[in-house]
Structures are given as C-alpha cells and as structure tokens.
Amino acid sequence: NASSSILLNEAYTVLSDPEQRSEYNRMLDEALEDDDDGYTGQLLSRWMVGTRMGKNEDPNETRGVFVDECSCIGCKQCVWLAPATFRIEEEYGRSRVFGQWLDTEDDISAAIESCPVSCIYWIEKEDLPPLEYVTQNVVKRVDVGMMMAGQGGGGQDVWAATAKYMKEREEKRKQREKAAFYSRAQAAARAAAAEALAKKQVGWFDEIVQKFGVADAAERMKQQVQSSVTGSLSEDEYDAYARVGKRKRSKQRATNGTYGARGENGGKVPAERAIVLSGGDRKVWQK
Figure 1 (cartoon, rainbow, N blue to C red):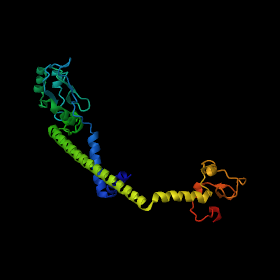
Figure 2 (figure 1 turned 45 degrees about the vertical axis):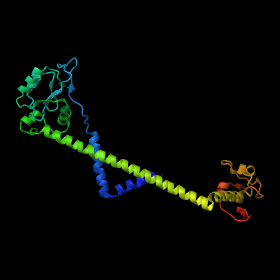
Figure 3 (figure 1 turned 30 degrees about the vertical axis):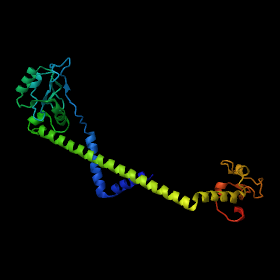
Figure 4 (figure 1 turned 135 degrees about the vertical axis):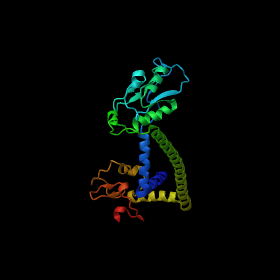
C-alpha cells in the first residue's frame, strides 16, 4: 500500500547513501551494545537486611559495603574478619562483597579498618548497582599476583569509570527518546500522506467513473467479449465450456460456431483464452 511504499522509499534513501548508511550503522551498533550490555540496575551482591541470615533487622537501612577491586591486593584480611560478607573471587583473586549484612556491623567495620590499602567503603544502597556492575564488567583487571609483581592491573579509578558509564547510558537514553519521538512523528506523517494519497486516487477514479460512465463501459465490454466468443449471452448454453477443469476438446463436439471459438482439433476455446475484442457480427474464429 501507499504507507509501505513511503517507508520503503525512506529506507532506500538512507541505505543507498554511504554517509547516511554509515550513520545508521553507527546508531544501530550503539543501540545493540546498550541493549546487550547486561546492566539491570539491580544489586549483584545479595541484600540480606531483614532476612533470617542477615545481621541487620532495620527495614530503613540504606547502607551497603563495596570493595574497590581495582585497588584490592587480595590480602584476605576482610575475609577473615567478616567471612560471610566478603569472599575472594576466583578469576582475579580479589575481595568482593558476596552478601550485604551477613555479618554484624562491628565485624564489617573491623574488616574495613583492617584493609591495608583502604579499598572497602560504606556507601548508599542506591549507588551499589552501577559500582558493582562496572567493577565486574567494564574496568579491566588482571590477576592480583601479576599486579603485585608490577605487571599492570592497578591504578584504575572505578569511581570515575562508573560515573562515565552512567553518563554515557543517560546520553544513549536521551538519544533513544529523541529517536522514538521523531519516529512517532514520521510514522504519523507517513500515515497522513498515505491516507491523502489513497483519497486522491479513489476520488480520481470515482470522478472518471461518474464523468465517463466507466462502470457501464466495463460491463458493456464484458458483454461484448462474451458475445464475440460465444455468440450467445445464455449462461446455461455456454456453461459447460466456461467451467475451469472442463476443457477437453473433441472433434465430435458441435462445430456450427454457436458455442465458442474452435481450436485446431475442432474443440471449443474457453472464454478466458479468447479475450480478443472483435467488432461487428463476425466471430473470433472467422477473422
């Protein structure tokens, strides 16, 4: 229909132009990357406040614990002092918070204070999801043994990396909203254009029909074709030869020209195969 044609024309315009296609591919890659990055805004550690295993029953508690794994040296001091809260992750050998408030506040505070590089922090619960996600999925890390041997992996600022990541996500969100707004506007414009085009076409056809009597002319043409082929307007008389699937010709059939055109074998030619217009009283096979 007209709407599909407009949409296809727009797509062709974009994809056939190298610059527009390059920009389209860039935006598509960004959208796919954003959709597939896996960030959900949820905690990666377990929030155990108010649970049977949790050591904090305060429903209004908003604090959580975070380990800057880029700075952690894997000394395990925190694990020894608050073993239910902290664990050593296997891939890089650094400390990570497994569950929030699985130890008492005193034990957690002691673990924080015992850290020789001061990489454990109390932070607000709402700030934990992006920090945990960026730490585990965005910043680059190496095995703690390699880092301690001076082979890289230290010094990355997870706070700055998280701020950058969230800023970029917000910019992408705004871009998607803007693109969606324009898409809705474009869709509405396409629909309006298609409707206007359809009305124009229908109006033009109706005007021709009423002005020139096309409908009557079409019916007269149909009758003329049938009359030229069959020599009769009788439905019953020509029914056996007009029916699809009943086209067997035979020299034994009537050959007096009352039913239809004759083929080389003496049979009748059905109407759909003999649609050549003719004039006067002469039959098709007489021309």
